[in-house]
Length: 400
Ligand code: ADP
Ligand code: MG
Ligand code: MG
Ligand code: MG
Image (cartoon, rainbow, N blue to C red; front, top):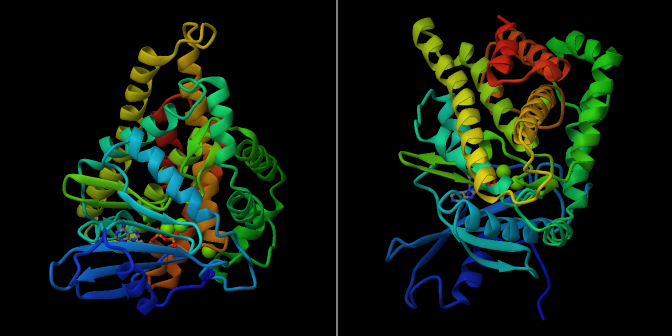
């Protein structure tokens, strides 16, 4: 029996040819590695005769960007495959179709979405996709509600939770999002022009106590099956279609973590527009669309979440009047706190941020990165005073 090995493009072609269900017999397969993520290899395979194509994503036993000095479980592909199935069930049409999972070679074969583009890129180029507010709200409301204790039977939820114990991926988030950025850690990677601002963060005891609370919430608040890495690079869009990809970090965690990741990345785009759109009128217009997007996602999310609640919550004590309002308010406060952490980690920590990396003017970049740090801190520190989405927007608007 063959064992796991990282595939070359040639291996991928041979692998695909060993199955009859993906391509016709006389297919002329061409394969290209197209991955741009931090962790895995992504291959696109096209049949030059029929034009049919698929994506094969294979995990390496370490993070692609770090190298083999950091071992990382191949089980993340199982998590991705199983999460995709659940998400497809509850949020049909909003994730890529999964065709095949191979445990031995740690790979999935899925629908080719090359007619879509990564949301982050569309935001950098100032594009507007009106449908994403509703699509993302639906993805979030459905995947979160239907995997929570508000919907699942208590025993069923605990069994599902055990299926998604994802310790190594969680540990990566715990370290790179909630710990390292707040200390002078080796993994950090930042613009030296903002060293001063970062040192202030390292010295802020008050802030670090709040980060500690958020880290503990991430580790212990097993509310629902969350995506776990819902930044704008995990969303692909085209006119009338939105797809959420890459759920290898999925586990039962706090609902606000997904919403927070999403809002953080929309906000980082909002800040970076000062470098991307020269015309100030056009820039303001795009920035107000981005803030509108945050509000609209939130409004539509709560609308859908409340509808599910009214329809499906049967537990007598959960049904007590006013409880859903508390659940939603707490989710918003968590969202704000996690969004703040995600903003700061992109500036201080290991993960880079294409929205800022493409800025040539280093002084301007430093100014925008400092603004991101400031907004991130306010979101964390002020989150308990937030009770509606307009309060969260007001926190952002404090930094001008
Ligand atoms: P990683 O886990 O390494 O971050 P991703 O799943 O995010 O990998 O994929 C990396 C890149 O590969 C994406 O940014 C996108 O450009 C491309 N990609 C991933 N899945 C698909 C798909 N189903 N269709 C088309 N392109 C894809
Ligand atoms: Mg990715
Ligand atoms: Mg990934
Ligand atoms: Mg960085």
